[in-house]
Amino acid sequence: MSRKNKKVLKYRTGFNLNIGFIVFFVIIIYVIFHIFTYFTSNPVSEYEVQQGTIATNNIYKGMIIREESVVYAEESGNLNYFVSNGSKVATSDVVYSVDTDGSIATQITGAQNDGGSIILITGAQNDASAITDEDAGKIITDINSFSSGYNRRYFSKVYTFKNDLSAQLTQVLSQNALTSLADTISTAEANNTFYTYKPTAPGIVYYGIDGYEDVTTDSFTLDQYNNTNYEETDLTNNSTINQLDPVYKLITSENWNILINVPDNVAKSLNDKSVIKIRFCDDDYTTTVSFSLLKKDDAFFLKLNMKNSLIRYINERFTNIELVLGADTGLKIPNSAITKKEFFTIPKDYFTASGDSDASSLMIKDKSSGSVNIVSPTIFSQNDDFYFVDDEYLKDGDIIVKPDSSSTYRVGTDKDKLTGVYNINKGYAVFKQINVLASNDDYTIVEAKTPYGISLYDHIALDGKSVKENQTITK
Figure (spheres, rainbow, N blue to C red):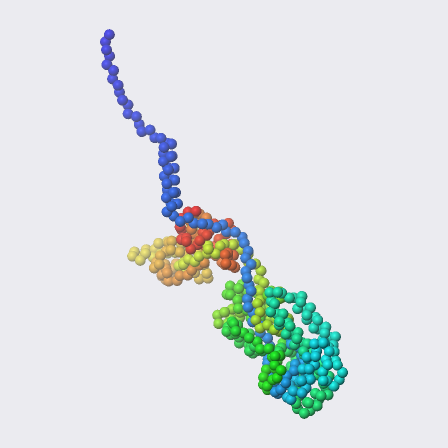
């Protein structure tokens, strides 16, 4: 049996591509890349824009301006008042008297002191005279009115009311004494030892001065408004008076004004209005009044025109007023998201439409060759004369050629800043301008549906100062 030779042939096998291995390798690379970027980048916290409301605190100090003048004593001697503080008087009413020898003033004072029992038992020539029902009724009405409006937060007003009530009672008793001493007074007047004085014009009597009597809405100063050392002198504390000393103040008109220093944004919001609702913080009295805006040394003042309630606040020169403006509604964003960005401002007449596109374009002149390149920068905002563009397509010093003209404009000649936030909807940061309506310590309300602005449910960077234009966002 013959032996056959066997020859073994080896075949080269081709490269076996393992799809599973490739997919696994790509996944590993992808995971490593994201781990690397996570640890080497700063994640950006985001905020979703919501509809919101802010009720701003619009309480301001008001300075009261009245038509008032100080009346000065014509004689020296003992002083007695016959009209209650804050009372309306006619030219026929006796406001005060001066007794040069003190004899009648002593009898009037005796009537006041004995008036604690509401009965006058004085040295008057006539029988004792009681307080009238009308006088007693007015005092009771004042007490009830104060009690109903009492607020424990303003307890100091109790002492003011006590003094006013005491002065009112004293002057009622003095008036009664003046009547009962009529014969004695006539004799003293004939001897030029006793003088009674009436106002030269009808008005409202007030027994206090503070140096603001000649101040008007035109002549006031910021120092007078911001006076932290304000003081008022109570004239009823004087039992004697010298000639030419102030004796009382006469308010000759029930029309009065309140001046309020307001921020620029509040003044701007009120620029197209003529009436406003206000609240007096001391007693919660609310009313609607007309107003106008004044400017004093670059500060805006609201001039409120009051036509009633003068006697209600006759004791006040300064008072806290709330402007009831209502709550501001719009898009609510955190203050931390707000930032500023500087832009080139390019005159509008240097822009032109490029080809079939409606996009606004600029013709940039090459400094070396003189050729012109067309660019279409992103417009972030505009005013009457300029568009705001950034440095994505332009750089400081570029020369822009004006369409159909040989005029040129150097980029960077004019710059300005816009207030806004960074929109991160697309995974990278894009600056968006905002128009602020109101703000508090934490949030700001901005106008919705503005050109170049943000919209409801947009995602914005929570910390606007940590983000740059076109920055890729890692969340």
